[in-house]
Length: 425
Ligand SMILES: Cc1cc2nc3c(=O)[nH]c(=O)nc-3n(C[C@H](O)[C@H](O)[C@H](O)COP(=O)(O)OP(=O)(O)OC[C@H]3O[C@@H](n4cnc5c(N)ncnc54)[C@H](O)[C@@H]3O)c2cc1C
Image (cartoon, rainbow, N blue to C red; front, side, top):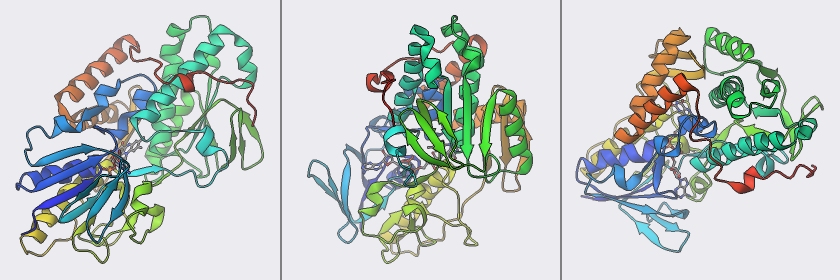
């Protein structure tokens, strides 16, 4: 019986898979470029200083202390040989197993938009969130020193994409403008700060019901968020964005929530890539042509039992990880693998204080407002990894709710904090 598995990626999918394999005493070698697991759904709260990094990230070695057969390696995977089940790390080292699980997740997809990669702020990892936080603080501190920067668009924050990430980030920024910045910068006209969301679609929250979309739009507009629907972003410069209707917004902060594609290393595996650069996996989560290579989570295009595509969600990744572990065990024991069945628990998005939208279960029972807000808090706290994360996040949310203080508003990326106001596109 084959006994060792290399798992690339310690996100929702990779961690769930490694845990499932460890339960059966399988030797697992889990490799990730970071030494921690990160909870992407709350990155925007790190960027807006509602949570600290330790609330949403946990060392992988800590997660697996009680799983004796799981070995964690920190390293960047640069090449994958699906035939020999071998991955090569940036330092030249290699890891091999009998089975390979590719769970390397996604990265921002800039769709070739000129200037986006150089000047926009994506939000896909802890580093992105810290960079964005430093940028926001850099702009605020600069205007606090000299309000002349207002003429250069300092108070225009542009968000590209009105999906869940764009909605949650714009809501958090609007709340920051209303509740937090006036205390931090009492001498500034912070209420003049504009949060502008641009999307080609005619509405927010694609995939949600019209009721949820209308609720989120209304709540955000009441909070001062401005929407430019039916509008794309043509170019991004250090000092402005050019929109598809050729209008321009002067700005020094563009947040990219405009879409994602599979991580670069997914393409290095030599497997045929489908939509979004992801691998169109077989119903049992194996890569086409390989019964000992599994691709899961945001690196894969998953489908439900009827062949409908599943969204790139933490819940899909986590369940695919657990299911893949089960199928790896089946393969090792000479049993047939089974078709992945996703248990749809619903979707939700935070819109702002006391305001969220939730569509629960596969029949999409709709909740909006404070009830959905409470459901969102409960679900996200329970999903956070480890007691430290759960307690830390709940304490931070409580403090934020009551006192509106932001003790994690720290500058840790000086290169993003320092702004060259004279740089032109
Ligand atoms: C801002 C944001 C908000 C979201 N909100 C929600 C939400 O509210 N609800 C929800 O269900 N889902 C949400 N999602 C989606 C959810 O987070 C993803 O679907 C989920 O994280 C996918 O899990 P994964 O394990 O496939 O990938 P990831 O969690 O991305 O993990 C992939 C791992 O692979 C590692 N890796 C990648 N390339 C390499 C390499 N070359 N070498 C070594 N390691 C590598 C990465 O470091 C990472 O740890 C959100 C995503 C984002 C970005």
